[in-house]
Structure formats: structure tokens, C-alpha cells
Length: 119
Ligand SMILES: CC(C)(COP(=O)(O)OP(=O)(O)OC[C@H]1O[C@@H](n2cnc3c(N)ncnc32)[C@H](O)[C@@H]1OP(=O)(O)O)[C@@H](O)C(=O)NCCC(=O)NCCS
Image 1 (cartoon, rainbow, N blue to C red):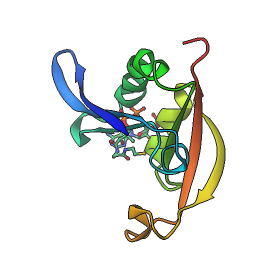
Image 2 (image 1 turned 90 degrees about the horizontal axis):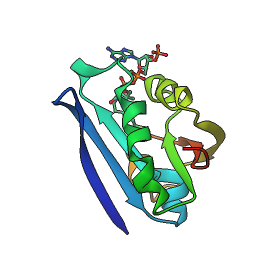
Image 3 (image 1 turned 180 degrees about the vertical axis):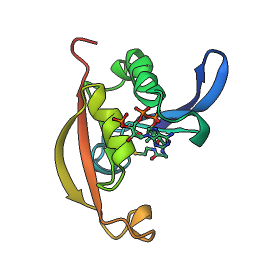
């Protein structure tokens, strides 16, 4: 597995981070996802997360045909950010007990699919 982490910049200011992961096992497609991101609290609400995902797609395209991004049902902000850029909710899956976030109380992941055709 390879992974890259980038700063997210807006007008030269660092506003968050985004990661790209090159993995094809179920852990990547169903649990952690190919792309993960966080925007610093003071910079939220400007669409930066979605714009950062779109900016990463040329790199993602070199690794996978379909980008899977996961989140939890209660993460409304993430779900809104994903849906705004065209990610499609495919399904909810149970988090297995071996996965790290199970111990933190998470039980369900939502799997969002982002087609790379057209980008
Ligand atoms: C999820 C996250 C990355 C979204 O980033 P963002 O750049 O703020 O995304 P957007 O600007 O598109 O806003 C998405 C939603 O966040 C909510 N939001 C808006 N302003 C906000 C603020 N100041 N603070 C918190 N949430 C806010 C709104 O519900 C918004 O949806 P809406 O515009 O349709 O009402 C960010 O909230 C975050 O870093 N959260 C913690 C880490 C995390 O959950 N990462 C994703 C893991 S799957």
C-alpha cells in the first residue's frame, strides 16, 4: 500500500489535509477509502474539502478507476461535501470488529463512489 498526504491550500493559506491511498483490498474500498480529508475548524464551510478532492482526481486516476470515499452516517458535513461534488452513496456496510474505528464505537460506514470518467 502506498499513501500520500497533501496540505490543502486556499489562497496560499493551509486550511487542511487530504490523503490519497493506493489500495484495492476491501479495507480500502469499504472501510478507509481511497481519499480522506480534514479541513481545519476555522476554515470549514467554504467547500474546500470537495475542491480538494476534485484537485486530487488526476493523481487518483493514475491509481484506480473508481474512487471510494467512506464516512459515517452521522458525519453530515462530510456527506454534504461529497454529494456536492457528485459522489454517489452506494451502500452502508458493517464495520468489522477488527477494524480500528470499531473500538472507537463506529459500527457503520457509508460507501460513496466517485466515477473518474468525465473529470
Ligand atoms: C467534513 C469536512 C472535511 C467538510 O469540509 P468543508 O470544506 O467544511 O466542507 P463544505 O464547505 O462543503 O461544507 C460541508 C458541510 O459542512 C457543514 N458546515 C458548514 N460550515 C461549517 C462550519 N463552519 N463548521 C462545521 N461545519 C460546517 C455544512 O453542513 C456543510 O454543508 P452545507 O453547505 O450543504 O450546509 C470538515 O467538516 C471536517 O474536516 N470535519 C472533520 C474531519 C472529517 O469528518 N473528515 C471527513 C472524514 S470522512
